[in-house]
Amino acid sequence: MEERDGEVRWDGLCSRDAAARAAALDTIGQAVLRRAESIAPAAAADGLPALAARDGLGEALARLLMLSKRCPFPDVREKSEAILGGVQELGIRIPRPLGHGPSRFIPEKETIQVGNEDATMHTLFADSFATLGRLDNVTLVMVFHPQYLESFLKTQHYLLQMDGPLPLHYRHYIGIMAAARHQCSYLVNLHVNDFLHVGGDPKWLNGLENAPQKLQNLGELNKMLAHRPWLITKEHIEQLLKTEENSWSLAELIHAVVLLTHYHSLASFTFGCGISPEIDCEGGHTFRPPSVSNYCLCDITNGYHGVEEIHASPTGSIPSTESVCEVEALMEKMKQLQECRDEEEASQEEMATRFEREKRESMFVCSSEDEESAATRDVSRHFEDTSYGYKDFSRHGMHVPTFRVQDYSWEDHGYSLVNRLYPDVGQLLDEKFHIAYNLTYNTMAMHKDVDTSMLRRAIWNYIHCMFGIRYDDYDYGEINQLLDRSFKVYIKTVVCTPEKTTKRMYDSFWRQFEHSEKVHVNLLLVEARMQAELLYALRAITRYMT
Image (cartoon, rainbow, N blue to C red; front, side, top):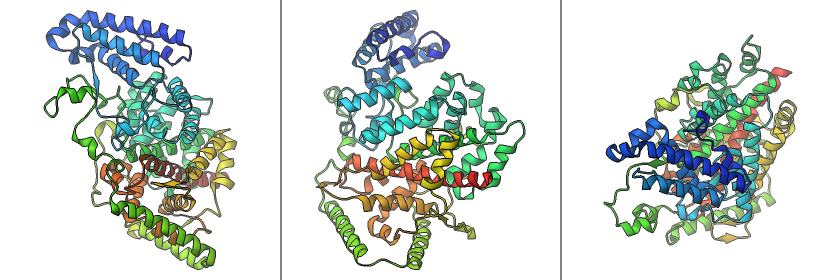
């Protein structure tokens, strides 16, 4: 019933031509209704779910449900809903969405509703849908920041679909391997579908040991990049490039490294913003009728989903004096730090000492709910050594030298290496890093005309500090002044062990800030993490080459 088995083609819905979409919708509608009519008598007697699963009708109905809610083209939304209505009239139960909106952390009413977006956002949505065949929940949360989203989508499209050293199915499989390191079933599910759609061998999905040896060899680099990138050496690079028949070329390896770092950091965003499963994926819909035990039918028809949403928003309640004071105190600290900067500058020795202190202290930042979580089998099969996770670098007496940005930086070294071996990608990544780092609306919670550069730099440099990366010209004493403990716990969890992020952590930092500001924080976390991983990998490649 899916497009790959040749019966229903969904591709035509991605066209920007309304006539082409209408023709595709007619064909889809006829195929779905034909299948529904053939099983309707049995479905009426036995119920749909088992029959639908067997016949592929369930997958098609879930896809139509997703299109009816998430397609940026109104004609597709309306026709998809009409097809579902036709199936329901045959006495077959149709699916309904589970959850409320694209994020479990952000109330649906505070996100952009598809169909209510402005012209700029509509263009982004249409581009995303035309490229991916869906408007995913990551996009619907990132669109709080359209300038960044545009750069992100352009980069991701280039990595996955444009000319490059690696074949298309390898690219999606590497995405699966990377996302699986953090047990991110959301990204794994999306790329399993994409992998099959571009002709990938389903047997590879039974476990990494079923994939070609060349991809298996990437497993070691994948786990080190995800959890302990400071351990990567030129010897690891040499092993991948020198293995006789399964060797990687330098260009292929750069492509793979950029994909791995992209999906490790995207897993951080997925967990950090509480991204919900896609409507047409597992966990995003159900065929069961809604339970009406908790509230009356009029509430359901009005879109009210019970008590949970009242408490869901940090900004939804009347501002507490404590959290308003939090914002004022943070702004006062920024002002004082700026005045101190103007008055005196610490010596190089003092700056180095402050960095080492902050690096050491970052090791002891952990949440009270920190516990080992076992990888679920369906995701863990995509990578080896499931026990290998994040470790602070100076634990157990193991010392890692500080990585000085003055000796190897993205701007002076990494950028040109990527651009030379994988043209245009260095430029795309550079633009994305700059947008995330410099993005500002000059607001802080309810305050306007605020220079937030000091705060943004503290967040970025704290993440790099956790990875042992030091900027000689930065005073690391500022970090403790600007980032409180609950914020540090959130940052470290999202960056290092994103699968352990909870709604409580998200709610407990910056309680008076807008959701868009918390999403902005996540963009900084994503890009700072990606750049840190890239710096270690690219430095090792450079050392191998020289």
